Length: 578
Image (tube, rainbow, N blue to C red; front, side, top):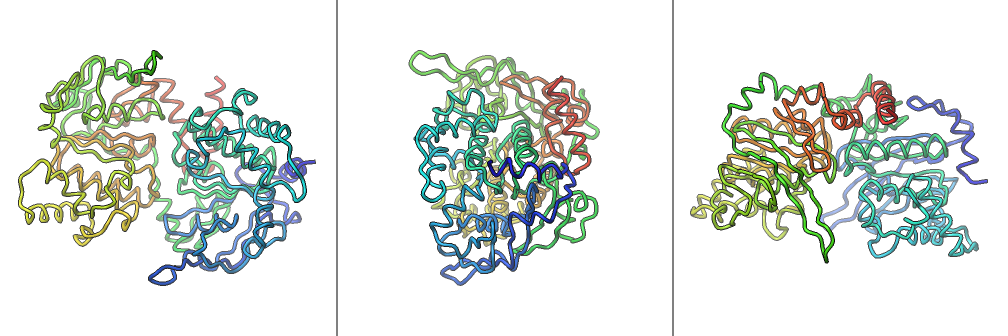
């Protein structure tokens, strides 16, 4: 009998949002007085300081906190995945074995059999040159019980079984597919399948839905819920998304600067948080219905404002290769962006929202219809004639770490547009950079730092400063807060609102996070498979959607309230069945 089957009886006493755990079974995981420090050239850095927690059979424990809180370090300690520079003390007990002190051979057996990990980014967790079936089978062979050999036929059969468990369609065929042949959500399912292959009693899921659209996120959360309810698997969930916590967790551990500052049942924590840090964390969570951005905006006011961007039957296609048909990413889309307004564009991956944003900035070519940007027609545009307009368009990229040149200082990165488009003396450029950094609430001294020396939130502020360097009339922000903690995200969003009000530029804010768009945008468009299925005043679209896809998108968004989220989940499942 598998461990999952044996634990199924234990899981039967566990209810969804408020589990009543049978303490006689004992914890699946017990962390006792864990301390982790990292040795660096400038001295030891303490990452985890005297952390103790337990996880019972069939329980989902969420560990939350902002970057640097120690939550991911704690998670990696559970599987013995810390680098050699880490110094650990205390105990991490799984099935009576202390992961910190066991031999490498014993640790290899614990991994997979007793505990497995679901990594944050499935695309980097999977090897692109091997089929997913081979990779699942390799895990089976690497972590098989001592002295037991797993045949190729058995490994393939178990890989197919694991893919079937996580809902991959046609697993007998797709077991031979490579990672690039799966969508983002399916790749995450494959990673979960690999984790389940050896029936571990505990899964550690590190930000398993961060990069996913809300509809795909809902599917992955349902899958993890099935792991708990059907197989009795315990889960340690590492996340900064409090909506995900409300949707899935039974108990919550809040960490701050390496310490556990609060621990409680999920309903209790959300209803009556005790610590100030927890209260601030919950207050920073963006929620639908808090939008004041569209207050006072009318359809007529939107139409009468100066139009900076106008799309009429816009088509953007990518050509096929070797005679294969091309792909239509944007299909006959119509919209306008008016002066001084923030227009939001939402939709899941592949909907065409980023393609449209890049086309407005002249980074993608349009292939049909019309797209006029600041009075200039982008269909068959010539770079030589469009270049003078580039200074009027700012762009904030999703990942500033990737968009900044790591060999340039922050000051040099922010100054780059000024140097290219304006004739200014070095002293004038330095003065302008200092002004921009102060505008985004970064000290002037940060101009001398390199991108890797800034936190994620600080880099995103610097990216915003660079986008504003030339006082643009139009700013395009492509998922600028998707990778940020909720507290940092809240600060960046508030900063964006303040700067937009001060400078008065128009903006296209692209995101798959509906609550973020709801906070900022006066006008919202909803994209689905390249088509604009709904658009209008933000509060109306988010509050009273008319298109079925918009309704499904909003229903998929987890809210930071366990009781309310349980109702929304039931309504969403009913909507899917209907």
